Image 1 (cartoon, one colour):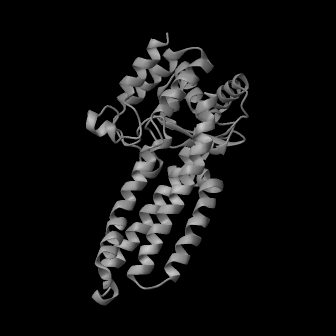
Image 2 (spheres, rainbow, N blue to C red):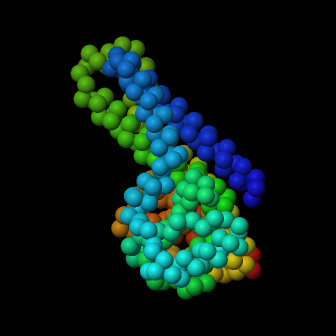
Image 3 (cartoon, rainbow, N blue to C red):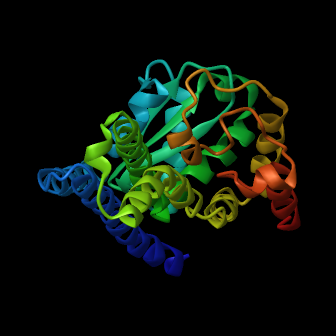
Length: 291
């Protein structure tokens, strides 16, 4: 687990660097195609600003996108107590607690480090799970915090969206510009066009690179935290039985949740290969082998 924590810290820097390179490449080809060096400068500025935003503000963005609101202790006393007990037993600071008004049972953790972390749960999760199952889910999310998964996963929320936005703008303006603005070295123009098309795909691959092993690791460490793997296993089975998507699901934040927010829990092997989550049945099987 300590190796995983160190790897996640390194990967956070690598993802930021890769994002910077992709944006600079888009800016370079925009500058070439439109013969405007200023576009490259803009791309550099945008990449630096967005990298800083991703590091310091992406948790707030993820919470806002999901429609989460802070859970008052007076309204969610039991939820606060469960998280406090788990945080004490794991040696972690108590994270901020949020609730999402959605009947789909789900939850996620976000933040840049354990001292600046938040956990959000849906009302559907609170209504459908018993205390032991809810404890298993909360332990899973606290494991993401302790393992520094949250920093890497949260940064991706902003970066995926920014790359997709810039490439979409470049692709649209490419076809609307006049022919003369696209004359010159044909192969560079083709590279620019390919970059506009492939950039969102590369962003998706970056998102998928936030390895599913982190979900398996969080399942395992969360179960060690509660000393009862069956609690999380049972919770995942109940979550998988709810097939409706979340009302405010967003592809950029899908990887944050404990389960796919689209409602597609058990998928074909091809769909699962491009999913942000391992199949729930595989996760449940692994948990029950720990018993």
